[in-house]
Amino acid sequence: MDKVCLVTGGGRGIGAAVAREMHARGYRLALMSPSENCETLARELGGVARRGVAQSADDLKGIVDLAMASYGRIDAVLNHTGHPPKGDLLEITDENWDLANDMIVKSVVRMARLVTPVMEAQGGGSIVNVTTYAAFEPSLWFPASCVYRAGVSSFAKLYADRYGPKNIRMNCLLPGFTDSLDVAKYGELAAMKRIGRVEEQAKAAAFLLTEESSYITGQSLRVDGGLTRHV
Image 1 (cartoon, rainbow, N blue to C red):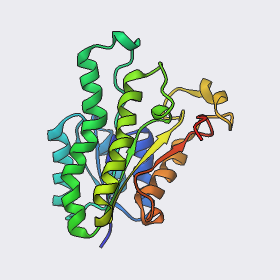
Image 2 (cartoon, rainbow, N blue to C red):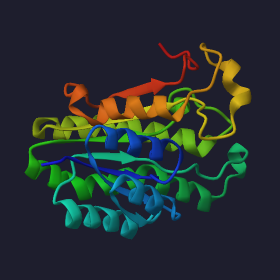
Image 3 (tube, rainbow, N blue to C red):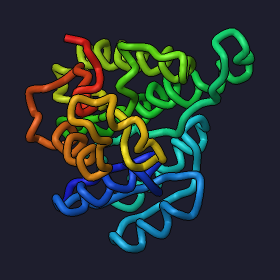
Image 4 (tube, rainbow, N blue to C red):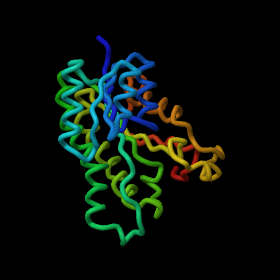
C-alpha cells in the first residue's frame, strides 16, 4: 500500500516543494493551503486537496478527514504555515500574539491530536514542523515568529519522549532565507553566501519525513547555509 503524506501550507513555496519531493518518493498526497494553489498542485500530482488555514481547528480536521477518507492512512505530516504579523516588540497587539500562537503552536498540537491515533494504529509515522532558523537565535525582525517557533521545538521534544515508544517521530525543520520569498539580499549573511532553494529545504524535510531518518526524533535541523552561529 502506498504511503500518504499530508502537507499544510502545501500550495506554494516550501510546502509545495515538499509535496513534489514526497510524490517523487512514491507518497500519495493530501494538501491544504488558503488558496486554490493546493487544489491545482493536487491535480497535477494525483492527490487530494482542501482549502484551509493552519490556525483553524476545523480546517485541520477537514484535511485529516479528507486524507483518511481518500487513502485510509497517514504516514507523514508536514506542518507548514505562513508568517504571523510582524512589528516592533511591544507594539504587537494581543490579538496578533494570539494569532501567532494559533498559527504556529496550536496548529502543531491540534494536528498531533488528530493524526497520532492514526499513526499509533498503523505502527508508526513521522511529523515535521517547519519553523525558522531564528528559533534559537531570536531576531527583532519577526518577534512573534521567534517566540512561538521556539515553543514548537520544545513541544517536539516532549512529543518525542511521549510517542517514541509508539514509533511516531516528530522533528522540526529550521530553514534559513529561502527563494520562496524575495530575500536574495540576505544571502551574504549565510556562510555559503547565497539563499537556499525550496528544493533543498524539501529534500531535508523528506529525509525527516521518511524512514531515512528512522532513529531521529525530537530534533531541530537547521537548513540555513551556515547562517546561525549556534553550536
